[in-house]
Image (cartoon, rainbow over all chains, first blue to last red; front, side, top):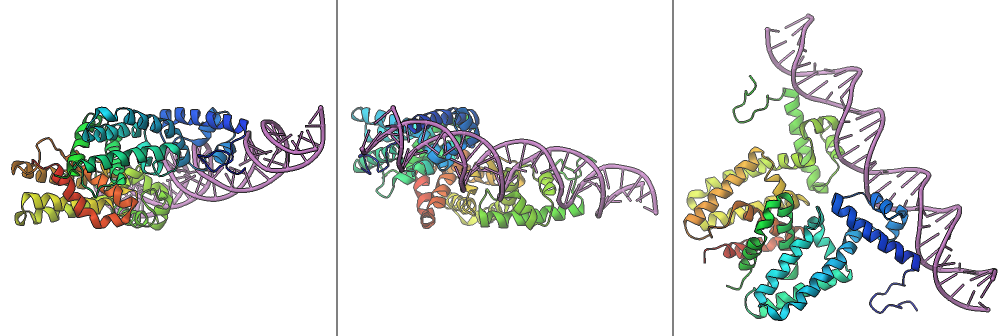
Length: 190
Length: 190
DNA sequence: ATAGTAAATGGAGCAATCCTCCACTTATTC
DNA sequence: GAATAAGTGGAGGATTGCTCCATTTACTAT
């Protein structure tokens, strides 16, 4: 029984390990919000009341930890987008989704710069959010409002750039919709 | 004589210090290109044959060093833009300038993410390049080919996005003009 | 129950880097 | 050729990243 869980190919965690994993994630979220994405991993281990070795065993590097803490929020964001799908035009839907991603990427300082890596990490939330982005993009392209040669990574770069600008100057947060509009007009099939 | 140099309010550097400053800048440029914007500052000091204390005295943090190494190139870029001004339409001029900024921002890995900070650092090159961007933008807006609600920071955001895309996938470099075109179409006063 | 074993743990310890501090050196001025 | 202000270098403390492995713990089969 190498693959007891059909959605992953990893053996299930032992009960104590699963508990610790959750504790690490909760601590990481809290510390990242307090101190930014470059916070000390030892601080996180300490707050989770776990040895540093345990943290590294479960999350081999900072990226993995960032991705894992993002996971729940990314999935929630995808669910919300799917739920609202029927009530929105393709244009509204993709704008709303991009704005939601920006909100996610500015949840704490330093996350924006890692967004690209997080969305390539292969976690469930990463897959889900890329998938939803692709779906909305395809829908917009089918509707003829976005060019065919735009892909999901173009969108990720756009979200990253808008988020970095907010990090450097929080006043830019007021211009998120404006900028999303600029970019989407830019990639529009005029 | 507190302000012997009318363009800055700092006392002029002693001859040896000015020499070392140049050596540090040259070393920084080389090391950043080799190892990216997060290279070790001690490596830079070593290559400049200067103590680490000297580097910190002149450039109190990494941002300052990044901004200073960008300065010459930014000024060259502004000069080139001004020189070519008479021969270009407002549209051509702004496209060329944005493309030049992208080239600058992709000069080494990690610079794109700092572009916003560099262009807010207050160095001469930073002022000059923002000023030139504003001039070209105003010219394009007066000519009715760019929306009135676009500002220089929107442009910087756009340059950042395109540059990040190139960093993640160097093949995207071939599509710079294409992407600049897309986004400038987007901010056009259609 | 309990013995066997594979998984999990924690933290000591080494390496890399940041950045400060200050005793010493050097350029400049009068 | 003093006087002095500016500049220098690098030792060293602090922080952090990450590895390694002796020890502990949860699960399983009997």
